[in-house]
Image (cartoon, helix red, strand yellow):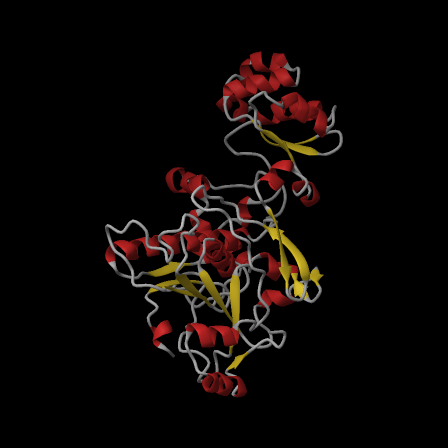
Length: 409
């Protein structure tokens, strides 16, 4: 391949299914300590943090694509490598579909270019390596990994579900998403490290490690006190009341994290006698007497609607919120205000809508997103503009089926 790709220095490795490998390079020579700005557009106030960074994305499904989508949101040029014909597995995951496009794929692949490369062809690629879902070394390094498997092995499913029920898979692939967030942060740290030292980094980011690290205090309870975890439904093991309650017409969640908030809860519920009851005076006592207290609170919440209770708690200082359906989520004024509904024009599906970025910056405005690409939509463009291949070489690669270009473009 050309020097453009051989110059890739800062490598991030993680894992999802058949491989998660991201290569990152600067378009310009790196600047080292003392440099005030190292993006490609140093004089522009609208320059994004990763302008001038190129990401070669060999990931598929969710963990990797989620990470590289965030990098794309921050200005990186993300080149997504897909196999000709089928592409990313999630392109076939549905319904629902918009036209022929999987909504699952559309949700995590904005701001990317797609090149279709047969990595098994002798001329298809120089950069490919089989990686693992449990880390790059160790007894399970070659085991295949999916979110649900890592969620089970890591203990996440063990602590998720109703108190007296079976283990439950979280409603979204939290292990994948956590791994993607860890990978995104690791890439940013590696770029900063390179800025300071001039050296690239090789990062091991895998599903199992990401999820075990997210066990947080649940893990610490076992490691320090030998306390095995259990399932609590919507409740909290160490705080009462801190859980969901059924109302007359739905559900809400209440979180009284200290004694003062518990007194306020009793006042709003018109159950002042509870606040004075010596069995409930402190959180430790409320945890000890959880069953009796929750029975009283549950009966009270059933007497009015969710909207009535939310109005009563408004301005009280007690955290409370409805358990929304997805339709209700995207009707929330704050969700709309935060820019979490993002629309764009897709070349075959037309206007699509996906969840927007979770983070906004004061230093640069959000830019209009590019839609998720078709398989091989940018193959010729990348070969010509990025790798400087001649038209004859590109034609030869296409005819040998080492690469493919989408016929729409």
